[in-house]
Image 1 (spheres, one colour):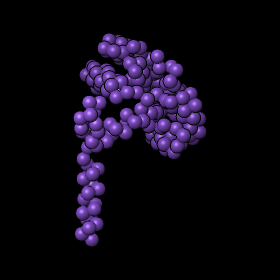
Image 2 (tube, rainbow, N blue to C red):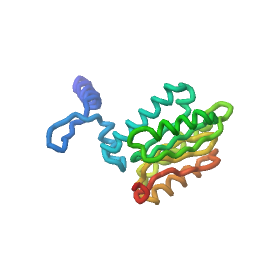
Image 3 (tube, one colour):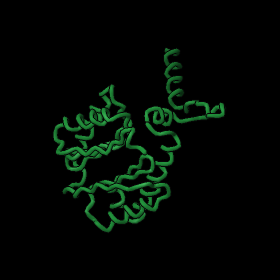
Image 4 (cartoon, rainbow, N blue to C red):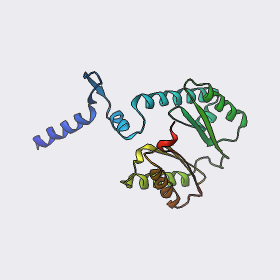
Length: 197
């Protein structure tokens, strides 16, 4: 029994301790497990991932500072400097502010928007169920690198975002989305290799 407890303590400690990784110079560095996994599965370099996340943080901070409720309603994504703003928002002045904010953010190459009319309850339980079922389907598809695909659902309409390895991966993700009960439409904003330049 004592050996079992010691073994379990080792497992817990191992999970809590950051992963050791070697930098380009060969020096030993500490890297969180999540970062190692994310970079291994993402089509972008670590530098590109970091730069994209910084842009999203800067844009979201400005939007929330302007108006907390409306700012949170705007979903913000960035892949290789290309920003996508989407959400259930019918305030045209705030939409314009969001676009202007994204465009003036350093390093942003272009901005695309996809606005949906707000439903009575915003994101509904049905939308959350669709998102959960779709995530399960994407993760269950071993031929698909599903960790690169983000999903948003508004009133049954699914948006797929992210960078994928091929057009085939994008097509598989769309097929999974269309197969989920309750989905009323699918918009693929997935970026295949040839569209990244």
